[in-house]
Length: 462
Image (cartoon, rainbow, N blue to C red; front, side, top):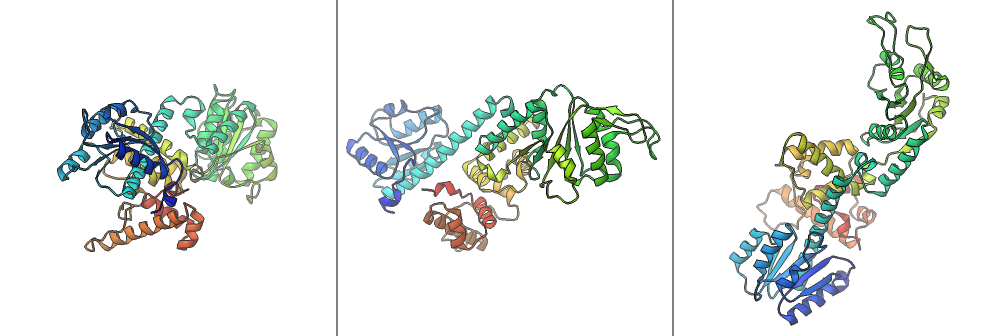
């Protein structure tokens, strides 16, 4: 590994602790050339002045130092900032000391004279872990402090922020809206938010799934019926239109609505009047209609153009989860917390491997799929995220190829596959398209394999 390959900006912050000035300065110089920001300290006491929950980096400390040695420093770090990665370096170490330090909570243990390139690799992994820890902490703080629209639509990505702004604007306009989004993106939740932040919030929000009701019953569901209107109609029933008077009616999967009912819906929207099935008396209604569809209604065969224009006063487009992967840990943490509280269980911590797997997966089922995965993860402490997402695959760590030929073939093949993908990502500096071409893999297959092995392209971007 050359310095040209090492020298990348903002690779992380290192708190370097060593009482020997010459060793400290030379190590500091090497790490700076490798692209790290370095804070040099000549004692453990001085190092502790920099330690806090918000400290962005890691600690690399010599063990043999006067007054307070590296092991004692490790103890203090664990007390003050549990989980802060600490790498211990010594020329006097032995196996027992290494094992003891790792059991206490040291991230790694390196003996002098050390290979500088190995030290840099260890520090890079430790800095990646620290970044994930801080991101997780930031997400927890965001969840606990969220209010208003932020507590309903969870996310910090530019895509979800734009959706929140558009939603709040449309909520005040009190116009009909079409919401577009893939299955599982949360169309009903967005519709609820439009209602809750509108002038109609004190009246009913009435959802109806047009695809879940038999065609023979949907007219009665929408407009109600009089007693005797059809076999089994023993008494008058108020329909969804009438019940949502003054409020909001949400029509999910409207693209499935039968043509004859589309005509009656159009008349009700144009005139603000409905009639119960089997009745003649007109009933005035004042409501807002929000429709939702998985497909573009303008090109959907069988959907009336005039009804489309009546509904399409405004539009909202919900981004799929694969287009806002930075929101995945936040959402997963939210549902993890909810499930743990509902079932009175201690909430599990998310290790960095599981976070990487979550952000590498493409989520074809969107937020609905993520919620189900989070619930299973919360209720079964034995499984990892990869175990749930890839149940037919043997869980594998994204590690180098094992030289142990006694390992099962599947283990060796998976380790080799992981290593090939990582090398290609490193060679192409995280360019997914270039890796797809180099390995002759479709994007979906590559994404699935990266998720399986917990490989994140961000680690390889220059």
